[in-house]
Length: 176
Image 1 (cartoon, one colour):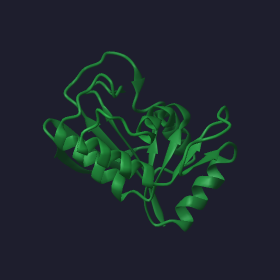
Image 2 (image 1 turned 90 degrees about the vertical axis):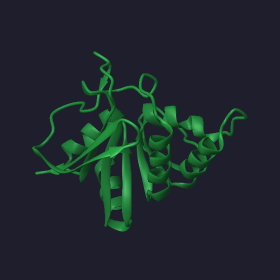
Image 3 (image 1 turned 180 degrees about the vertical axis):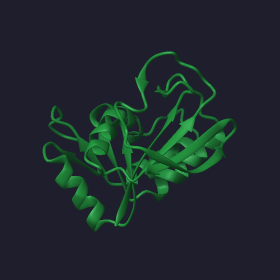
Image 4 (image 1 turned 90 degrees about the horizontal axis):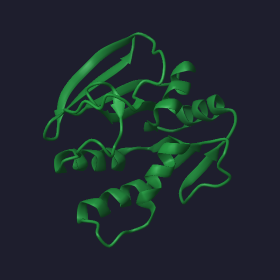
């Protein structure tokens, strides 16, 4: 049975904005290894559109960027959207009946499925489907933006803390 995990980089005050936080080389390698090990990813529309950046090679990329792109392209993706009519390579569009699709993925796959996007994570939390939350705190205070938690959460229990990269702390929680 697959485990559904919601994890993202966020500021100390709880906001997600990849353009306002630095990802050093160690953290970038961590994310590459993480993506390489995933069974697949479930994306909300906005996050999927952001990540489509990795679909096409760019001449300015380093070897590390190419490695991340290869890992991202390899994994199956499920994109939850009512407005998209198509998705890119190795992706499946999920329109309605989100709960049935995710329950099926969890039942028939093994390994870890990543959830990307706070609003999608909120919907999956409301359905009781998220197995783990990973908060990657960066030493930045943004003051506003999109919150990591888009709504109320069930009680959570801390299961681990660790340093990732140069200055990021990861807190891992499971529903209590």
